Image 1: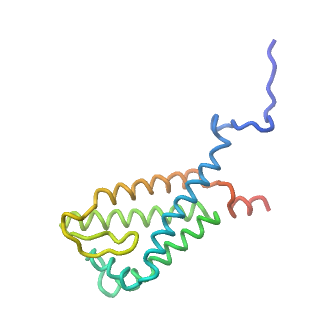
Image 2: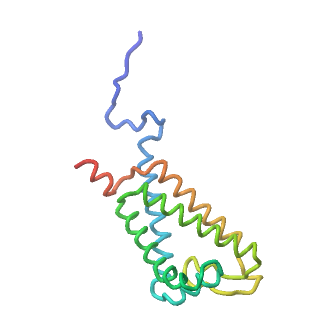
Length: 172
């Protein structure tokens, strides 16, 4: 005898996306908050010393001097804004896309100084500046940022998360 299963079973965690569909919003929440910690850490490390942040931008030797201070002083606030938006879960997909673009810029800048033989500390989490060639960590920094890009890609793909303003606004 064949019995039909109801289309929706209360408490069921499976769905059209597979066995773990109920876990996806929680995974997205963890990814969203993890990425928020990264941006908050980076922004807070730089916001208290804007001159050091500007110097970290300067040593890349990419931007004209007229843009070094605006970028160096403004970048920590952009990073903190991204962190705040991710913490509250507002505009998650858009914030993830902006995060991805910013990370790609960071990766390109690090690759640029590496290719040009310039020895610097990236200044990604404060500090920055010239260092001895033996102290550079370009490979690790690029891999780290690629790992962050994986988090970004998840949020672009699966932005719906728990404990977010996005979810609250949809329910209103």
